[in-house]
Image 1 (cartoon, rainbow, N blue to C red):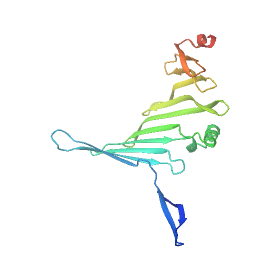
Image 2 (tube, one colour):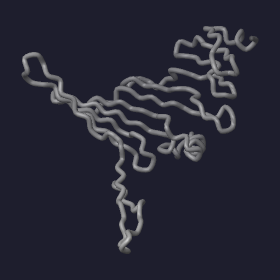
Image 3 (spheres, rainbow, N blue to C red):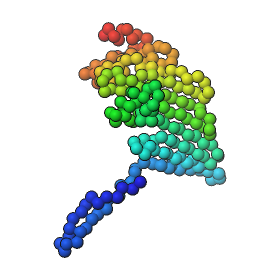
Image 4 (cartoon, one colour):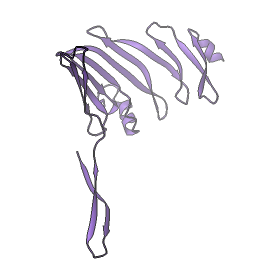
Length: 196
């Protein structure tokens, strides 16, 4: 899409109108080619990466990589504005309305046509107008979808107070200096941090 507009317009001394065109192009990378040459110079490996962007919000939605060896890899991304229907539509509608559209909510990785990885970050609103990850689901290959990371608590500035990884051992933080820097980190001691 090319935006052509008459931004600079003025009249000359002899009464003629002069207009200068301003051309605006999207500055997003859409194709990248990488060639790896071996020492003997024979059979270079050429990798071509294509990127696709959402036309409304201009967020990257697809990364496709193809090699001269015939291998392909595809990454897909979904954002809050892509998930405005379903069980979590309300939070994603609020995020979109607040123009909080950058976080990738769901990503999938395919090798050839087989899905090898899936990640889904579930957001919630711990405080009015603040959107934060609540937990992250993941799937490897055809395995079960399980929760790989849970964010238990945030403070009113959006700092993580506690998270629980897949192993179930919580990690807690205490924030100081006007809640700008972490001053303590504790593993398996969430109740101790609450008392400090």
